[in-house]
Length: 268
Ligand code: BTN
Image 1 (tube, rainbow, N blue to C red):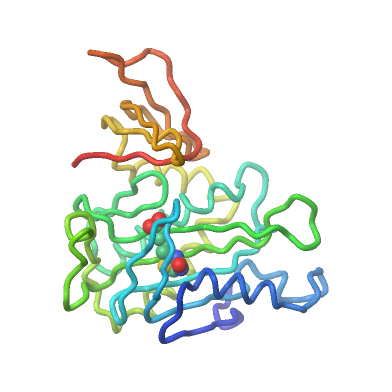
Image 2 (tube, protein in one colour):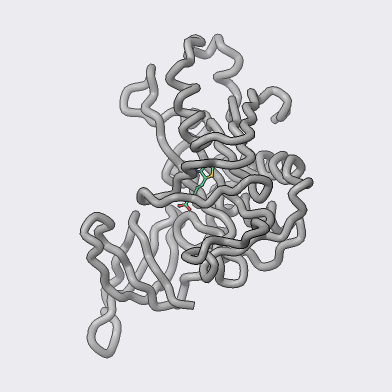
């Protein structure tokens, strides 16, 4: 896709680029039909900020977004381009693969994915992805578009990470001046990785890059009550679900449990 066709919005500072994208979609009066050429593009708009005052993460968490340090990007993705088994729930894992390949293109080594949406370098988080679905105005019960929010720590802030993050977060150590180049490369990777014909390849890569397979993790079964159990991660399916064996007293259950959503924590 020709990236010049994408509407681009830049902010020196904003609360959250995902919020800016939602606002834009709500205010949009353009016709939502096939006659509108913008509706035939997989990516219609991107929102980029130099800093965010209320960067949002999954499960109500925040995303630290200081100025001149990272990429804070939201992409409006047209889900009409996804077919069959390649549905919206796979956007986040596939984009995680795109981010890994992009960071490695710009010099990072060995980018790993912590199910479901975090990218790790040397056991510390360098990027998070928050995909939010918007209910279609014209197609019943369909999510369209999806807003893909990506936060990447390119460089560490001169004051370092706040204390609560310093043990768990890192930066990619990519020159901030390369930011636009990184974004362009990432957009092209995302367009490729979300293509239906690349489904098996990309999910295979998602699994290969997982830093959980074979490890014992705490599964947070219910993120509202915080109920957890320990389990060993056996595999990841081509739907991006985690297959685990729950821990008994001194061994693991034979039965395999499939986890679709939620959160796991791991001690490195
Ligand atoms: C997570 O770590 O759980 C996801 C973090 C996602 C952060 C990005 S930064 C750009 C976009 N705008 C937001 O407010 N959040 C996402």
